[in-house]
Image 1 (tube, rainbow, N blue to C red):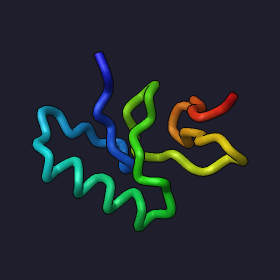
Image 2 (image 1 turned 135 degrees about the horizontal axis):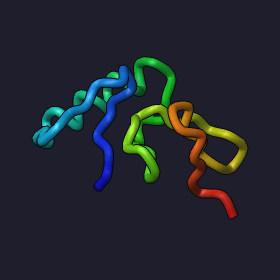
Image 3 (image 1 turned 120 degrees about the vertical axis):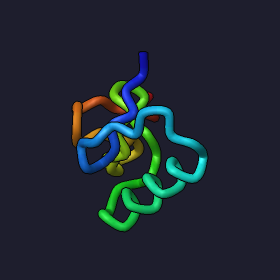
Image 4 (image 1 turned 60 degrees about the vertical axis):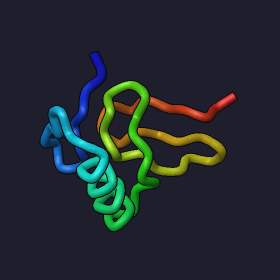
Length: 64
């Protein structure tokens, strides 16, 4: 099951599309990319070279 933790550590639960849009907006305002982590679902991804790194769980995506 995929976690729906937001950048502030709270879980969105069964959030609708508007709630996800709000999470993206908040994440971008805090300096994050605005995408959800594939590993933990947090919106705390930062650019790390050509990759994205999750500041919550340390997972990476987009690396080759």
